Image (tube, rainbow, N blue to C red; front, side, top):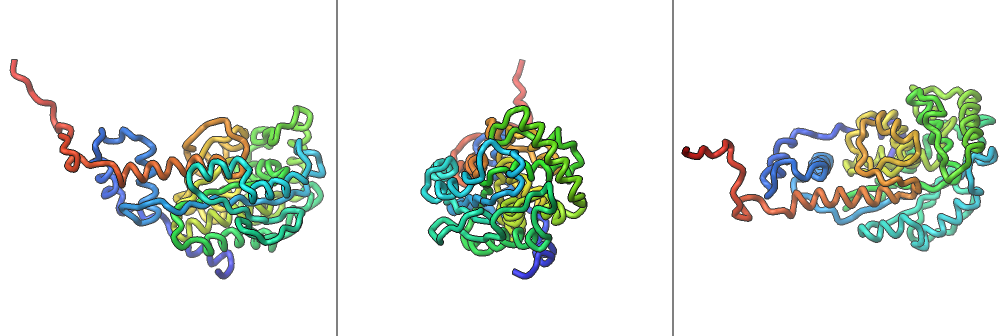
Length: 358
């Protein structure tokens, strides 16, 4: 795999030279041109990323990255950090929301322990990439070292390398009590937005806790002074291990030309880090949905992404990614399974209106 700089150097832009060919295929299907809207856009994007004219999506994986956060000491979440390992076990058993939706779209869920404060035994459906037992409290210093940040990102890249053979579509997900706090800090630092404008209620905190959360983010940024032009510095100082892993997965997807459907607020924080490390990854990202979290819109704008759905989701885990992946697959099936005008014996649209005699 090499180092992170080697990964970044080897990412290529999406090859758009076949755009007109794929568009012609879509336009020749038995429908008015463009009438299936963004489903057609998804089909075209999928073909351009993968280099395939007649693709089939069979192998789909949602990677749900988990990690704990030292900043939970500051009361930023409505839930205790013990919930993180409990939910990891729930994922492994197949009982979480992401498991239900993944089963619905015939995708696998693989949970990745990036930094949970718990020791898991090796088991099917779990990848152990633990960098540490939770990040440090970012109000007192950096959440992690720069070396840890790079290792977290590379762990995500390594997962794509491991599973890429025959892999058709990727999805991102997250689990980590307190992780909306570093996500808000990341978007604030990178975009320059005030913390109040990009900080939401996370797991459902009240007004007082929300004010405290904003103050905590401001303190963490002031204490650490992350460089907005250095994404790895931002990740190290105010990020999370699972956010780094997601960033790496997005980079790996771009490196190996696999479309990646990005879930909600925390996943998009990871995508934001990836895009700051190499802007070319924007071409490989598909934004699943618009989260309830108020900072998510700012992230998506910065990434130049238009989300597929707006369902008031705020769970994470990869639930929105699963729904987005189903739409990508639907778009591809339109391209590959729908009849052409010639196949169906249907007359095409007249180039000019037929003139009727008076």
